[in-house]
Length: 455
Image (tube, helix red, strand yellow):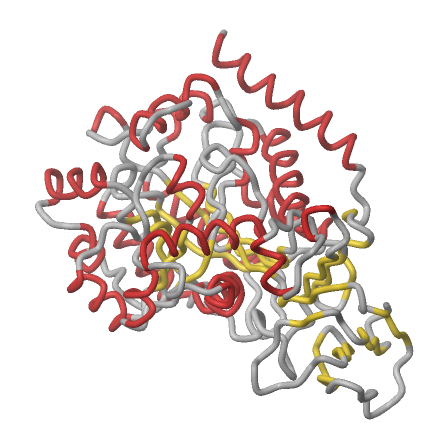
């Protein structure tokens, strides 16, 4: 559809909208926004330029991925990293990742974003913290790929400043100076960060983790983020090993460390956020810090189970993330929603966590985690970001509740996806992407990266 035309997405099989809004007759989209919710059996208030029959589709708000590492699609199921916990897993992969090249990152980002879009994702946050020689413009590469695909992104300018020789985990070749990190962060904010409703590209600052950056870069990043009004992101409280590292190096637990470097604020969202005690959860909620729950990654590395219900009760925005494709090992958002549902039931019980809870984390919750109020809901005035699924596979035969069936029967692929009123996925294919050519290119580059390490 063109930017100024109106589209009625008519009579969906099911639609996930606010309970007080009857949208069973569909929604009307114009100028990239939802301008009308049509009640069951009704027609739009004014005639529309186009009509799409959605009677075979379940419609969700576009799913929002709040933590990823696109480059890791190049190192899925890497033999040396199998069957390890976080720290030894990282120590195995850091030397491999240090060989990353711009062409590899471009292909990895394109593949990760394509995979995400095909699974119903319309906004993805990526945490990129690798800037070895030759990779100084890594975020610029990612911006270009996102723009080609038409997906919204929150690209975080990550950093590592604490190398092995100073007691950190990363190899020295991946470490940058404070000056390099801050000057590039400022450049990226000025060049790419979009503000306000409908933003397609946003930049956040994201020192990697307590065991890979210094307190000085954490403090300086917080000040820079405040000065330019952008968000802050880091890994925190993912494992007991990390907690032990903080106690031994800084003499404090993770949330105390967060506060000591000026990060205990509503500007911040954390990846994982598993190992918090009750008082720490209360403090995070009071500060408005967000948490991205990464169920598949946490299960693969046996890191633990986030306390989502206590976090939300304390006022912490909770969203979902697929995390890196070397600890997932995929980039599928609708599968991540299912995984979150089941992992949280394991903690709280099957009657305490519903499919609506899991959908909320992946939509409204994730939007709040990223500081967005214009996406994450099917409601009047919101951005027209939609994920549409069909129940026409064997796995869905015999299902009765379409919204529950998407998760319980294991949906994998969206039939259609819309971002800002534009179709980005049609008939299960991403517009403008030759899937087979992308796989061939990406696979060859993954082999090249692995070969670099062996030599």
